[in-house]
Image (tube, rainbow, N blue to C red; front, side, top):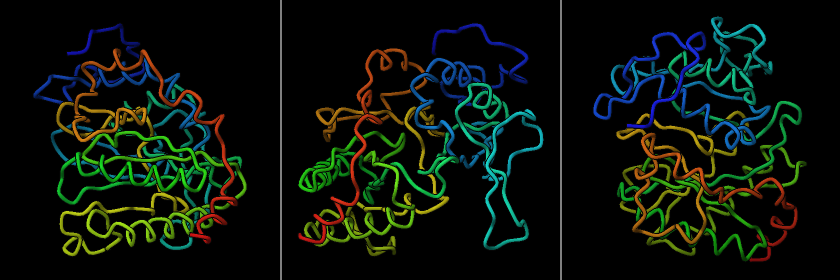
Length: 298
C-alpha cells in the first residue's frame, strides 16, 4: 500500500472508501496521488477540456461518462462552453483542468482517470499535440512495444520527435508536441494518413481496420484521439484497472517487450517521480506543416 499522508478532509467525502479492494487502495489514496503528482500533471491538463469518467465505487460497480460540469463541483471551477452540433443540449460546459482544487473535486466525484482533449480553451479548436494510440489486438503489451518502435522510426524520418507513455492499460500512446496553428481536423487528417501508410508498410504487425474481428493479432493504429472533442488519458492519469496503474511517461530506451505497464502503480509511484522523461515536452513544439510535406513525399 502507498504510504499514508495527511488528507485535507474538507476536500473529500468518505476518503476511506475502498476503490481497489484487492490492494485496499482508497479514495483518499487516489487523492493523495493526484496531489503529489500534480506539478507533473498540470502542464498536460492546464486549460484543457476534460471529459469525466465517474466511477463512484471504484473497481466495484459501474462507471459513466459526463461532459457537462456537474452542478456539485465548486462554483469557481473553470469551464469552456462548446456549442453542440447534435443532441438535446445546445451547449456543453466542459470542465477545464489546471487547478489542484479542480482535480481533487473530480476525485471526490469518483473520477479515477483524467481524459484530456488535444486543444486548450484559449486556442480552441487548435491542437498542440498529436497522439497515436497503439492498441494490441492480442492483448499483449509486448506487441504494442514492438510497433511503437516502428512508429518512432517513421516519425523520426519525418523530423518529428516523439514521446512514448504507457496507456495505463495494455497499450501505448505516442505524443508529438506541435506548434499551435493547425485545427484538430488538420491534425486528424495527418494522423489518419500516417497510420494508413504505416499499416501498408507493415501489414503483418499493424492495421487500421475498424472491424475488431478483422484485426487478428495485429496492433491497431488509432488516429482518432486527435479529433475535435476526442480525448485521451493524460500522462500521470490513474486507470480503473487491477493494481491501480497510471499512464507513465517513458524514455524510448524503456520501450521494450519486457516492460510491464502495471509495474507503475499507486503503490510505488513516488519512485517513478524521481525522474521526468518528458521534462522538455512543451519546449519541443514542432511544425506539422513540414511533416505533412514530408509525408506526401514518401
